[in-house]
Image (cartoon, rainbow, N blue to C red; front, side):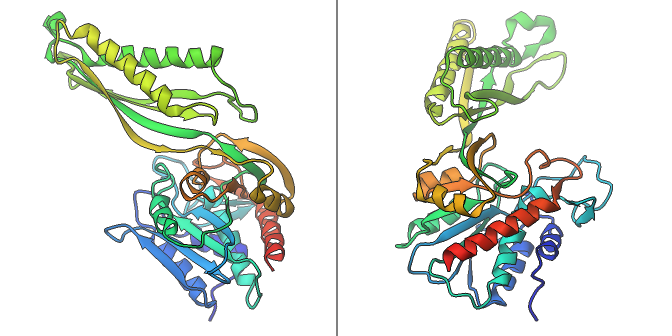
Length: 385
């Protein structure tokens, strides 16, 4: 007996799997694989070493010619500490909205993709449709990299990709890149009664944070700009500081977690180099009295931005299947930049829902957005016949 094929039934099933990034996504992946197998579509899994997580790749139609790749991530952010009026891992339909963790970001899109597969039984395709479902996107676009490694080895790759992050079904051709980094500030511990005889690592960290803020002000005043973004320039942001053990101990270590979100015209690596040079100067001022003084900066994670030319094949194709074909840029990062830069597969971002609802308690997607995405899928199928 075939699994349910209506989009809302599939969405309810997908949401029922609590695929928080820290946990396994295998139950959801196994459901999708079974859903596809029931329709004679073979799915390939690319698993992590411990087998707890997996990417899924499948092709509907011929595998020896390029096609359209529909891509999305299966993981969601936690609900810990959030106030939900109902079970976040069961969908609830109310006043034209579907509530549940991941409905907007981005199981709504995955449900529309699977619903399309359910509707196209027996359809002959001139252009194959590839499905790419990843894990661990929410923690820095990490999981999809092993899928890309596998696809790189193949003689035939998709012609282009549509990544279904929530854009209110608007066509997005650009997003910023990101470097996440940690500065480890090393001082010298001591008794707080003798504080001048020690070197306070938190003070070093504060100086470095001040340097980051000053660098941001320079970018705002004199840096490059790229219109189409809510914030049209590169941003520097400090998100977390951790240091100290007790009030009467001068701390010897403090860490600063910060990020660079760069527009396409900016070189994020060059900006990071300038920040590292500033960190070295701050530490060097203290070294005559405290040779142990140091600020070490390490990259924790990074992913590239996306700048897809407006005259590219993927933009022309996507413009024919969406309701709103006028391109825009989005503020958040996606896996599209990795598909484009590492795999050489041009990509756009377009999916149902709004990131305004993502990651929040009582996350929802409007029913009208699901309907718009289903319309896009039907048009996409017509293009691939």
